[in-house]
Image (cartoon, rainbow, N blue to C red):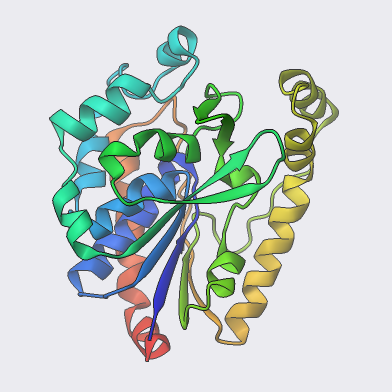
Length: 282
């Protein structure tokens, strides 16, 4: 039986996902594939590198370091999450990612990105995360808060713009069991964009009309996707983890207690739903 985890993004809400994953890792849930979006991709790689606790650890240590994620970084570099410090220095030196363990697992890992030129989602296979940090960075580069990431001749931003929750991709890939980890509670729905937001999008990304279309249609597509996931869940085609409590964290006003709280909600929800998950995986 082949099992795939689908990990939604959500910036620091991804600490919820980290909590769920860490609990399942300690329970030796063996899976074959992860498809991660944005923070889901950044945090999900640690499941295959066998580093539970790493996501919480480096976020607690550096969350208030202006070199990590800050308005200062956004102003100076165009990226709210600092490229050189958060992606490279932390990953390679300060809290090293275990590349060797990741490769030894020999599992499939995909990061979702959005192509600015055609507006389509692309699913990049990550085989060597240390050498594919730009691919991971592209997946998590939020519009307006990040510079466009160039990979080869193409330009990319946040995978969530085109495919926020790639559950359909996982089903198309014929995995027998699909486990979806969301970062919004069950009653969450995206609000329609205001005229001000629409104008801001059109002005900022006027060179990329198909990308604009994806941004403008995202609330409707996202809400429809949540409804589709509920139906798949009813039919026992997917198993879904959702936050049982509020997991919102302001990336500019974060504090350590909030990070721990969100992570612990993930741990608690994984614990509460563990037996149901095991039955589904059978």
